[in-house]
Image: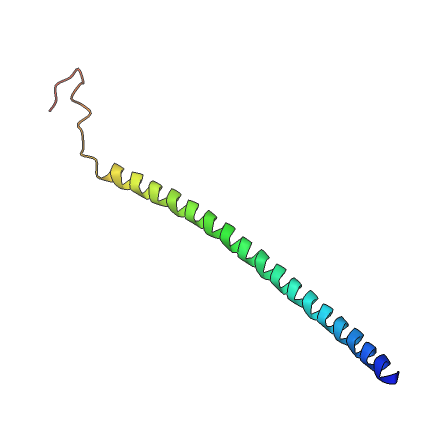
Length: 80
């Protein structure tokens, strides 16, 4: 009889410890999932920013590489 009571008491203690361990693991997993989601969102934002800056730089380079066109060609006065 005494052995059964001790065995039951031991099981309830170990179950409480297992529940605590599971709770800690769940909190840890949720924390790292949140960090992972925030990292993925930041990655997409940085990718969009990089594409925007690349497009801006490409347009700026195209403007610099344009051949100079004399704007006075169509003017009424003579071109000197």
